[in-house]
Length: 509
Image 1 (cartoon, helix red, strand yellow):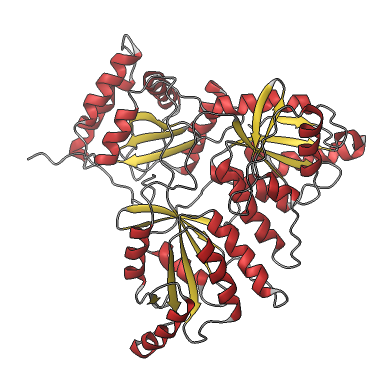
Image 2 (cartoon, rainbow, N blue to C red):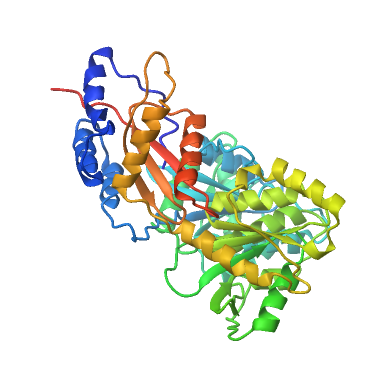
């Protein structure tokens, strides 16, 4: 969790010496990394720390081989037909504590999931309001869209417009929701006054239990709804939980017709040794175990790749939900890019979804055997321009159709996963930070200089670092730290996250 929403807190001038003292161990002269960590930890005793800080600091004592995964946040999906106010409800939920602002260049805004918080509990909201299907086949397409959102969720808010009452589309969705094993809260939106609350009673007929009248626009009833949602959500997500052990899980992603099926069929067809077709429904996508490079891999959600769903309208949004469902189950994503066509916004969007999910990443440039010199020059320029923010991802040039260079995929996957699992010992990390700060101090802010008191790696998968600081670090300074971490430790093929916790000095009694 970042404390980026906090305003910059400046120390009073009289505390300058105390800060210098606390940060002094950053200057060298400590015999060992362990001695440095002990001294820095002792310095933290002078600062206001909370329970979450304490558990982060305990994690700092784990050995370098400990794989630590932050518990997956529970997921709340918001579904319903067009114009019932889903997006207004999402904005209302996020508005209480704005979604964490992503300051990484190149991250697109057309997301389907957001981090939210209510009464100290953090969770993820999946918003299906971004795509409204057209009138043709609307019953089916809304139900399909809801089905994928439910596949991603631990609990569901089903939104109905109280002024319209239940429609045939709503009934389609209800049938699907009844078959799912997810808890569902029925939300009677646009209920602006007590008279409308009475009308909400007609929604009992849907058979989803008690309707909850709210006005997303005015905020009426939303707090009570969120209290109920928190009761329905588990502490740790059941759908997004990490499974440890077993074959490593790979998602093959890419826009339509880029060669995903060919790649999968080539890998499975020619080197198929063990293929385990697990029982597949839409909520439990088919996974296949395939041997590549002498190792068994689990390719996730291959049903979504095989079973092409053609929706005239909203296909992009639908594909985004599918992609996210696959990413939830995967550890590493192979994003397939067709080199015979210019890099598209959709290619970049898929890469950004991988970044957002925190999974390891490999870029596979497909149809390489069809590339001429002219196109190659343009392609390099496009990669430089549109994929600069993932220049750390391994690149492989393949032909999925012929199977050419498919074997190069395996070392790339192994490298990316190894980076994703990497842990830097706390002593080494603090020595690295000390050196970096000595050579490149943070610029002054309002005459004060924020100090980094202590650094720890909160988790692996992806490597997530937390800096305890005396003030807010500029986004570009955090990006500079990320860049230097990559220069020193590699991290090829994994996103890395650098969060801050701005901490105040304890008041002396």
